[in-house]
Length: 183
Image (cartoon, rainbow, N blue to C red; front, side, top):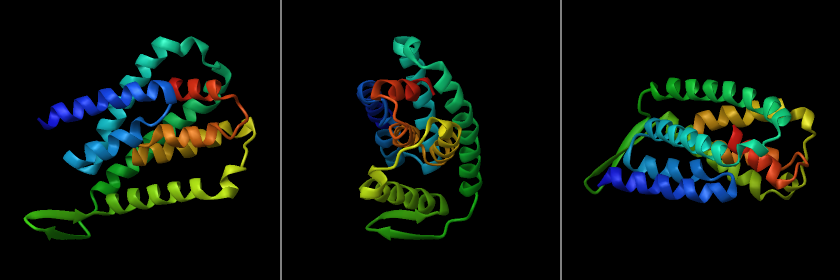
């Protein structure tokens, strides 16, 4: 039954992101984390993300601005590998503490703390009016790829981070959504 719930969630989330260009990791990672350890949930999210992006590339990939993609994607991919490497290192750190609620046991690990803090900080940035007005020149595409790729590899939230950066570059919405799909 768990696998059916996970598969249906992945299918629905993938369909929704076809229209938004992002959100797959935001929906899937927490859903997967309910049933699997956090590092497995992030890896599973990455696999679904890859399959979803390949599917989207076949659908609308010919419209991607290849110059922008080449300035952004290689850096994002390399940094995502570094982020996932850090995730695997953090996974090997012993449990910080554990507790029970009723008959269920829970563990607090450094991975959960780091990812939780990251999500809180990311949400907080979205609430700041100052962040709303920030704009980036396209010359910062490699840096945006590095930052979004690293934290995407660490937390499983690739699309939201890339959207946050690419939407601030002055490109029209369709252009940066296509970069998200192509990456």
